[in-house]
Image (cartoon, rainbow, N blue to C red; front, side, top):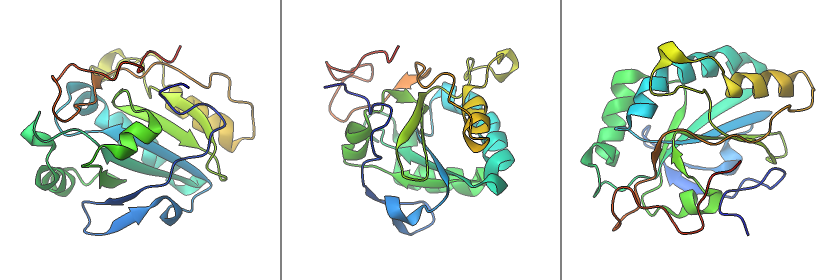
Length: 192
């Protein structure tokens, strides 16, 4: 069985606390399209692409697309990824998405999150239609030549076939609790 959720599979359920003080489950997000992405506070690939992700979220907000971010990184690896620092970052950045905390890392395992950032796009029935990167240069936005996330969202909302359903996410690996900061599960591998 593949480590990462496969195209056509249903989004796994979750119940996670958010930086806004609420706890959310998958059914709380009722949009036609759901972009769920694994992220964190410290990763240079996340920081380098946050503004393009913000731009994409705002561009598609009135087209039935909702963005939800999940931080599964261990605070024991990077204190910057702790829940209090997540709250602080959202207060400072005012990102247009819900920011959830997966302290047990169970949700990251259910989805097969490989890197930060790692994007998953689900249709109205919460079946996976795309997984991978958002852009081809997340660390340095000035070098972006491809925005796969916007391509997928454009194709989906215009009822076109998704031309490329899977790409390799580009970023830091998820920081697994109790492991070296570069460790990845043995069955985690590139998607394509």
